[in-house]
Length: 141
Image (cartoon, rainbow, N blue to C red; front, side):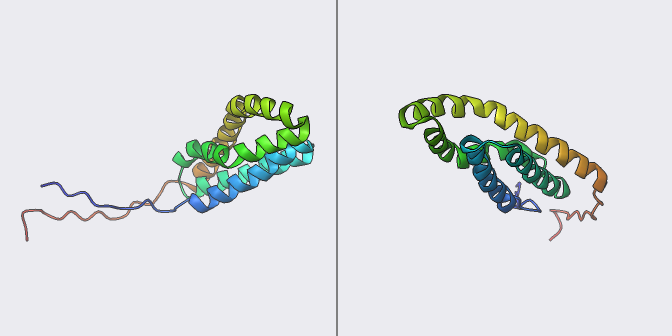
């Protein structure tokens, strides 16, 4: 009989990822409504902080999921920002096109930035220490 234990991964990253996604929503909204270099730099700074957290907690898989989480949070506000910037009808149509397909580029930049920072932090932190393994004989009771 095989017994599967339900273990949770150590170092949950859902809260930092949600905070980052909300911050990126505000930053991307501002980048459409009032573009500036400061907004872009702040966006990269928030992404670097999340990359540090993911690298420190050794959660590189979350680097792949983070751009999708960001997209889920930011799509509707970015559509609204496009409507503010370009006008209601033109902004709605351009928003659908630019935001939906432009997110491929935004997501790739987020992914690449998170991956780079996360891998650097993970390599600087060093190898994890091996914990002792206890093997229990299933025949012995």
